[in-house]
Length: 103
Image 1: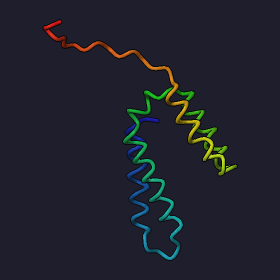
Image 2: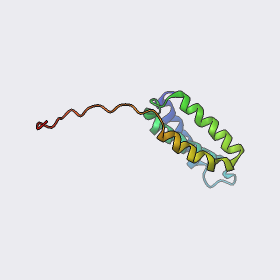
Image 3: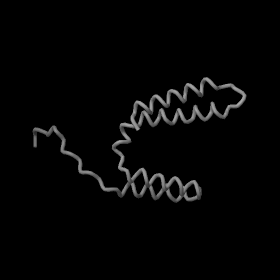
Image 4: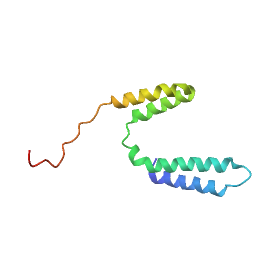
């Protein structure tokens, strides 16, 4: 989805949520405000999300479904995620552009 369209949809949803706020049925207002807020955050994060590998998004979706089904597994997945993050392959750091003239 294009970033501009996402921003426009978020603004429209936030506008509808504010316009319907205080009515007798708060469901529409609450839903529009929440979805609009999430879309604004997605709109802000979109440039960084393009660099995320697609397999990582799929893995996060599977983990989310597992945690929703069995919430107690969250306590097992947090240390597992920390260990996997520490053991991930690291890219070699580039040498500094500036070198010490004494070397």
